[in-house]
Image 1 (spheres, rainbow, N blue to C red):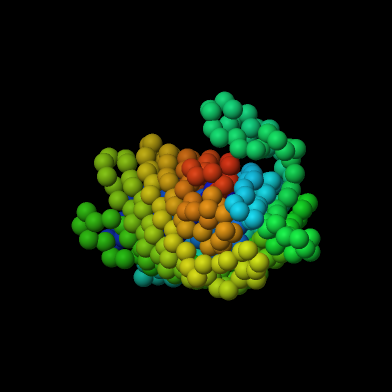
Image 2: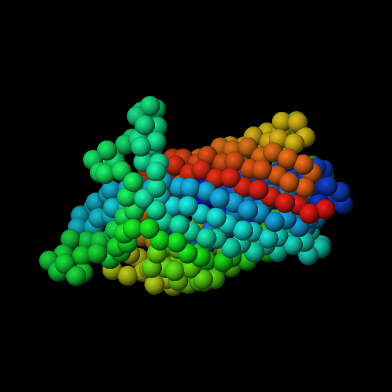
Length: 337
């Protein structure tokens, strides 16, 4: 989902008090569910933020998103070219364990496709004066992933080469969230632990081919009236991935952070804006690709009825080549009574 972008990115506190009562579960609170679906970052652990009522209610989420990717970079004898559109559908089930604890299972499904958004992206960039890079110099609507280095031996020139459409299961994740006791006027706080299993095909970049684990801390607080702030940090321990080969060098770990605002418009609707940052899990040796990623996400959440919520997200990269050019996502959450 991107981003849809998504992501992102960490089980976070919802804006629900844990002092023995729940303040509200309509427009249930918490950051937007968005992640960075860049082809070189998405295979590693991506844990979605958790809204709703941690430790209080179960939920079932259905999310679908589209991300458009384009990068054309070279540094020294190393180069990378990627031009594709990816679609992602996630199913996430959360159960309440009591004592302020929740356990979540997320199952992602990925599609790589030539897509249809290249012309829309180019028009968007021209209209707002955004950098277009070499995108106008290449044919539209292709599905190509290539990473390599100049070599006299053609057989060793491509470290990664994927072309055409593909689809398949991604890496399945389990997330455990613990809500901490809330002191008077203190932020709502959670700690979390997550593990990702290598169920996706790393050849198609639908998974990393290794297990990853993460620890996180999330906070939410009312700052004024209907305005809430959400923040989170996470440290990820990366398993040794088969993607680590040739010029691709994997980091031992990664860090991720998120800061967002939520404005509750009435009892059923919330408008959200958030920024997230993350270090790269996979080094290509090209500085524009290996630097930290920064993403912007804008969205809205609306309670269609007390047990059903709709979320829409628009994502844009704030640092070129470190995230999708554009991400769109829709999510539906069912909160059984």
